[in-house]
Amino acid sequence: MKKMVLLVLIAFLGINMNAQQHEVKLDVFDLTVFKSLDVTYMYILNEESGAGVSIFIPLSKKDNLFGYNEKFSFIPFYRQYFPLGPVENVFAEAFFAVNSGEGFNDANEFVKYTDGAFGFAVGKSYISPRGFVAEAYVGAGRNLFDSPGAPNFVPRIGLNLGFRF
Image (cartoon, rainbow, N blue to C red; front, side, top):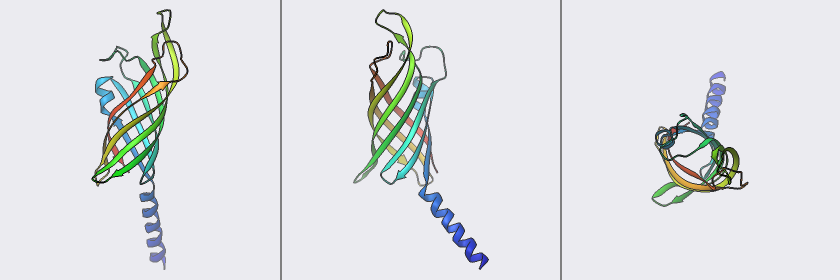
């Protein structure tokens, strides 16, 4: 009887662990191009959708390759995956980016800003049987609050590597 209860408990825990899937990823594009750390956590809601958050923090105080002056970004997002026959794991993403940085205002003075951008991205994920994840996406958001010094558009471009567990 004890063995039976133990087997049922192990089976239940195994089903529960498989039902809850998480992804943790590092954006290697931002790391190499912008000298920035961009880490993403995503919770898989079901086989067609997920919700998560990305955090973007620069690692260098010097200007990066493109002169992008964002100092911090917190990006909650929702993804919808589309099974397109032989092309699986294609997704569309809606996001809201709370971003801050430095830029020039209307008087051509260098000022700090904080703004919020709503945007969309599209991409493709590759998931190995052992949980390795590689994904690429591209999109943009528009800052909504016209903060002095804030750019009009916020890019959402990435090449993420990580794991699903």
